[in-house]
Length: 275
Image 1 (cartoon, helix red, strand yellow):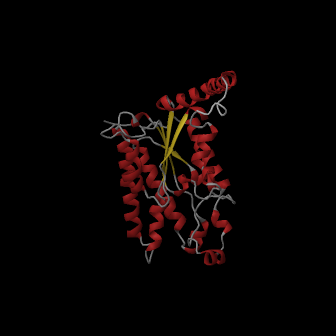
Image 2 (cartoon, rainbow, N blue to C red):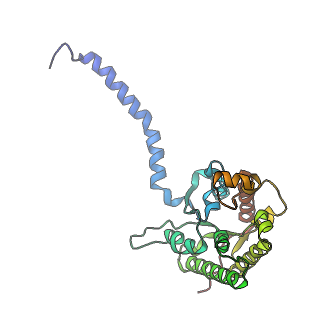
Image 3 (cartoon, rainbow, N blue to C red):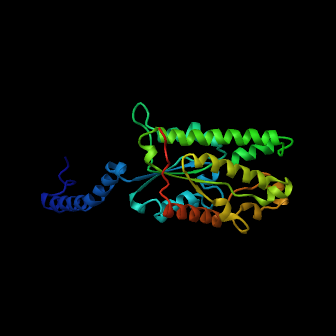
């Protein structure tokens, strides 16, 4: 080694002490990080299921969607003690929630599964939007098929939750659907079909005494809650966006979150499961 380029021992010692001091100062931060990793299962585990609304579409950014507002507000538990998993996906139907999202909450062969303590669900809107793909979306037989399939899926969702020893103890909150006036203007009776879907949900939920969050009532006769109010037909044609913009605005997501918070503060949310 070139002696001219090596540091004398007297210079190395202060440098060594500096590194030791930095390492000691970093220990509390490392301890906090380890605490979150090791004890994550002791925190309240919140899982959101559903469609684009639960995923945050319409909010800007999407992390201002109602699920994240609930998470940050302390509605689930103290912010620092809440472990969030948002499994919601745009365009998801009630069948998608049943077959693809809910299984992520269940323990598998390797005990993989989120096993939430709190579950929120927003589904059904895309079940109804599928009607728009048909020549006559108001065909009673078609509507009956959609509502029947929705009822079967929601029944299976509640039954699956009840079948798991951990999930059956979870607090479960399911939102109903708001009406979109712009759709009703083009397809008379659309809001009535939304009402039928909500009644179908209420009927299924009643068997389990499940808590329904009345988002429909929270939106009724209020303005500024839907993106559709901001998009006229000319905008749709220019932008190539969806024919109907059904997502909430930031304000709309705030109203949804408030409805969920009210339900969480006044009801236990636990299902009545019959073996």
